[in-house]
Image (cartoon, rainbow, N blue to C red; front, side, top):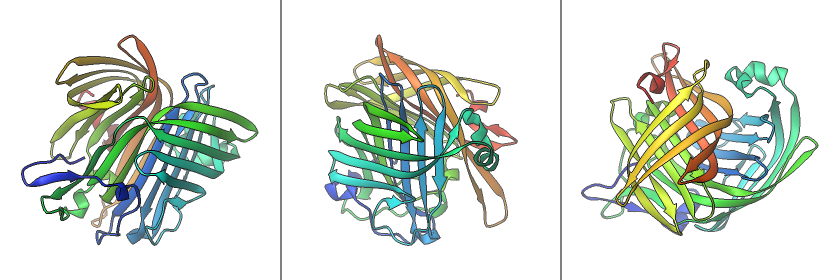
Length: 345
């Protein structure tokens, strides 16, 4: 997310909860995302919808983490020629009250993975694992203020950016509580937990980021974090995030994240250090269940690019408390290896 500088301010209005006018950039993307994890039942998931109307397609992802380690997953690129709503591929996001309440619904299929790493080869995974019916009904309520917005000029006009470098010009996040139900095949799971949502708009290629580490976590209604380390292809790095304490956000000024990996280069454990103006935090994480995903793109000159995103349901500890959340590691794959691991993160 861009930071405000001289002559730039961050704008966030209630109408930003809804979709924005389509821009000329061929890779214009508007997306909304939610995650939630139940600390008692150890069930959770994440849900994403994106509209890419200039490409004539959308993106829908549903990922469910079950208590025994199985993961139900589905991804689709349904047709999309406008940006009127977040509703496609069997999934619907509805803003019930801006900045406060949003609902998530899904009725469709999931590929049920006993070994979630099968998704490293998607075609094979969908052929060799059962496809089951699924229903999701979760109501999210904000437990925090809003974090972020869209950098604009002082007069409110849009900042122009190169489409090939765009990732999330407008972007905000919010810690949430989430309750409802998840049905996977014949199994029904009630869910009552915590998570985080985000909303982004503007040009986006997944290859615009060299690598990042994104750790959203909740320890309860009054204590949560989001830690972020983002590295651009030119080497520029942004480290930040926020800590939720007693209903207010405190900005994180610096972050370090160190991870342990398995033989498949998937994170298994991590240690994070975060500094605010008032104190420092040490966080330990243990991945409970993980699925490797990918995004591929061919450049106009024919170069094949591949981005890998590993999504781990993670148990966190900090200040003597135990919480849950996600560890999302994005890496460009160069010479068969994730670039972020090579730099020591």
